[in-house]
Length: 289
Image (tube, rainbow, N blue to C red; front, side, top):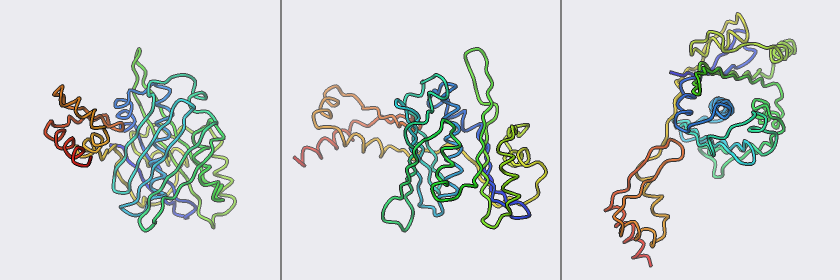
């Protein structure tokens, strides 16, 4: 099981978020049939989105939608709630090519928060200015004046002929406390430019990511939780889609005696709409006219 932890060192220099993502990313690849290059990009976006949800969502009713324009032909949508929903949609998942072409420095990353107690959604739009995924996510904090955040993520693959899967995947986000000494910030800057293998022998343990990055560091884990995909689609969701059809389209299904199949774009689950529900919806539309 993939895990996410929040860690604070004994000197209270920073709050550190780390996660492992191997199993979840393998499931995303299977659901959406991602190409290897696109899985690298979507995997990093999904990992960082999950960590950001911990930073930005406080109440059980809070929701976060992260909408990323990968390039002119592709986008990824990630929906996360504090209550545990975690789902991903990818347009054109088979798209392949060079990483810098698949995730270029054009387009936007949109953060949309729906928070308890707020009447309106809170929207932050970040213009992509780099082909480095971590840099663009860091820009969310740079825009608020906090330039000290450090983000690293990585993915390792197993390749076998034309097939592949994820050997390890993980990420770390370090947010220094306001009072931290400048020497610590210099230390982080040094580490950020060092070629550290954060995935070395982690065995799906996020604490080992922190150890790989910092070396011998002592502190406390404040929180630990499992990570897995969870979609909130349902048969009611399928019925709501059917209600959007025109009366003529419903009649066509009924004449052919076909059960419409509705597929969720996030988890690929299919729902076969019952014929009696189809008739009920058609009658409701007839009565309204």
